[in-house]
Length: 73
Image 1: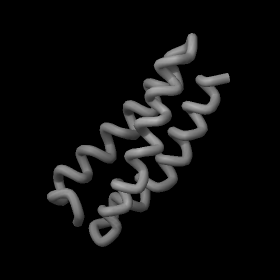
Image 2: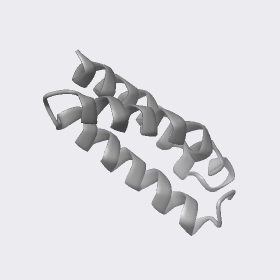
Image 3: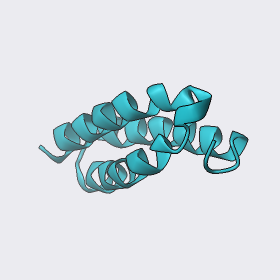
């Protein structure tokens, strides 16, 4: 059950992170990061690792995008 919740939080975060790759919308990644962290924690508590790994990949995309834009752009 926790793995499913983790995967759903990862999908919700991905929906926010994809438009945030457009330069004026880069600050939206800050909105997605709390959901990504909660998804990683829930995925770590579950018996399966797929939800946690998905959230880690989405988080990596968000963090790389934030670092390229200086945190806001």
